[in-house]
Image 1: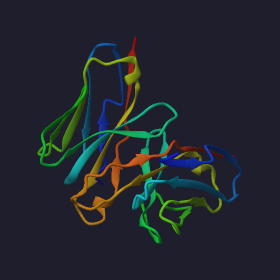
Image 2: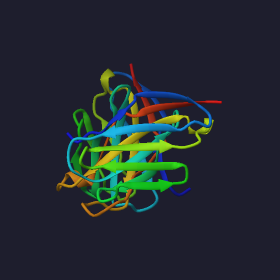
Image 3: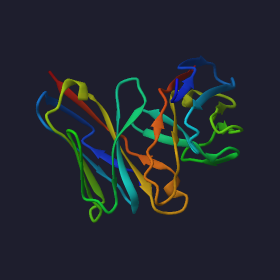
Image 4: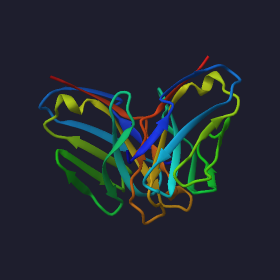
Length: 114
Length: 116
């Protein structure tokens, strides 16, 4: 399975601090995506990084990808209480059949305290 | 409204009953997906569909049936509900796919199903 595994499972920080979440996966990927899920809601796409990219930015989000280590990290800078949510990484495979769907990790639950 | 919707949002049923969860998207996306979300397991893919009349199994298909007669609808049926199917179910859609696609998935709000 190429399932991503997030680390840590839970993270609690103060408002204004940075939050870093990590994701590891097992097989070759076409791209890796991060999603956010607020309590009781569906997932919302945050950012996508292709396998030939090493770093990507979007507002306060910074994603890195190390394909040699099969790992990615999501950094949220200057966190806000509204960033409190669960964050999931998802990988898209390269093989026929594997590229049609995303495989999600179990998520990191982030709590940002005011 | 445009987007992806699910109905019902909450459902309580009894063991052995048939239940159908509805999913509707207004974008004419080719791909649609059904996931279940359980504590400790994250999101697991049940079934997906590449186009109307084309469906395929995901990671946990047992006990579920899907159909896709129209592009915009992708209902999920639990033929004989069991307590282990108590979960939150999410539908998602995606414009295209394939090795060169970087399309993302758009999720519905979810259906919370309880099987007593």
